Amino acid sequence: QLQLVESGGGLAQPGGSLRLSCVASGSTFDFDDYNVAWFRQAPGKEREGLSCINRQGGTANYADSVKGRFTISRDNAKNTVYLQMSSLKPEDTAIYSCAARPLSCSSDETRFPSWGRGTQVTVSS
Image (cartoon, rainbow, N blue to C red; front, side):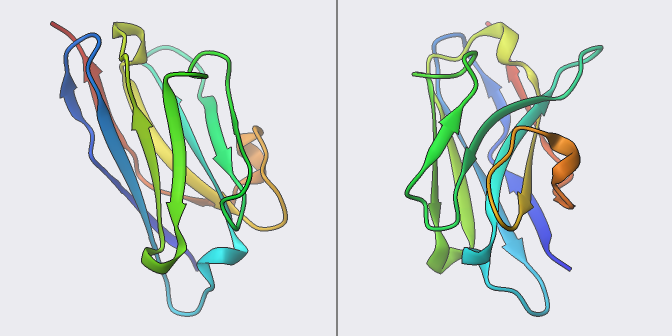
């Protein structure tokens, strides 16, 4: 079973930056067998898929809401995926979660069997 733990959330000012990390662990797994995505859920809203990076890190996709502001990357030697967030807006306030699945990336949260608990990001002046 793959476990995921997010970190790096907190309070940021509008226009500021944060970097989130998602660290994977488990009894027996190869991190480079998994595609990893970031999702977020704001109060009263549905969960939104933000970005997904493929197993080797060569391909990434982004939701229109974060394209050009957020960058996903991974370091397979550290079993870690990052989400660099810049030009933050108050509407980016949400709980951010990472999720992993084999085979291929997806924006469909139901296709991801492994999830972290999330980290809170608040953008406010």
